[in-house]
Image (cartoon, rainbow, N blue to C red):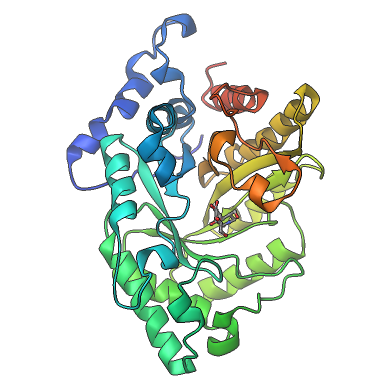
Length: 361
Ligand code: 9MR
């Protein structure tokens, strides 16, 4: 039996526990499948029965302007991740001037809808403010700036973040550390420092290291494993490993994902799929959609087969707002719903996996 995940209350009100999503997840248990309402059959609700949160990255412009998007983000998922608005360039565009507006909106949205929040991300090499990248700071200055950033951000959201992606994408695919401004100026110890500072600022948040191309057993996931072993030995407060899960139907799905995740599980760490999407060469068709469904299925099964895998987050749920076409020329349609919010086979695949895991098939 999977252990129930430790639910962290989003916000302080006990009302969050009684949010519609949670109630409906259990309200119709004794009825036949046909009699359950739409809400009770969402991925989020099914996930709660299988002890796994099903989340989505949220695009704040879409959340504000697109009612169907907002409705689905609220009803279909039991956790949310800000796609961009907790990143450094957004929260501190000018040195010393914080702007938490959009991030706070998402945290409020989550509270109202009984969802948990994955904080993303305290430390990355991308989406840094220009004042920082062009500042020509000394190592001591940069270390103080980083410490202040992590402390201030984690403290601002203290008690409202379930899991923080403390460091994001610190490895190259060959398993060496990424040659970022952080490594260059601060040396490899910056990773342990980041976790210590985040923990001091918000001791209850679960602290994750997050990366892509670490779904299967490979040079990168093994290097990350070795780093995590070392950090644990040094008593660095790290709780989990986030496996992003950006796949393409043009490559084999990572069928050894459960084997890979088990290594982390055996260390006593939590794991999560944090950014799942499966892109296809455009135009999409039904064959590609079936291949895509397999990709999603492999990722979710990896999680469901791992004792302490706590959540499965998709990186956006509709093709209408995906990052993929801007990054991979000629590819797209990577999400569970098309641009008109019509569910694809991938959606049914996830649903079937969750029904099975919840023992309700
Ligand atoms: O989806 C995000 C996109 O809107 C941004 O333009 C982009 C900037 O690099 O970041 C995207 O999100 C990334 C996430 O933060 C970390 N893992 C890879 C994601 C896709 O690039």
